Amino acid sequence: MANFKDRVDTRLSSRNIAEDKCEEYLSTVDGLHWSRFGFDETNNNIPIKFFIKIPEIIRNVPDYICVKEKAFFIETKGFVETLKIKESDLKSYTYWNDILNLYFFAYDCEREVFHKLSYREILAELPTSEIARYPDNNKLYYKINL
Image (cartoon, rainbow, N blue to C red; front, side):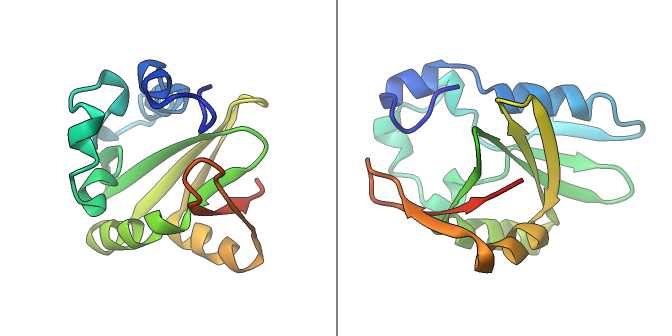
């Protein structure tokens, strides 16, 4: 799985295993209709030099929209050791959660298991989560142990 240590072109050229696993899972849920909603950065449909000019709230649109009894969003996150949630993304997640409930499909790439969490559950973990910064961009993130 690509990570922040890899060059951006390497990260974008590798397939997102968390999204693959999410789609596998969504396809097994009876009575659920789902569709790709957000940007798929791995297909490079918007070159990075243009993508970064799009406001964060739009860049952070959830990955999927789903409908069963009600409509909801899903954001996928792949991780190794600990789930990382950027502080800068929380504003966007709050925005999207106010439109439709937002859920996270967090895929542990080492253990090959996934976790389903609501945005409220993520928020509840933040006060007790360790905080760190990415060395490449100095962005603050929360480490959520699952």
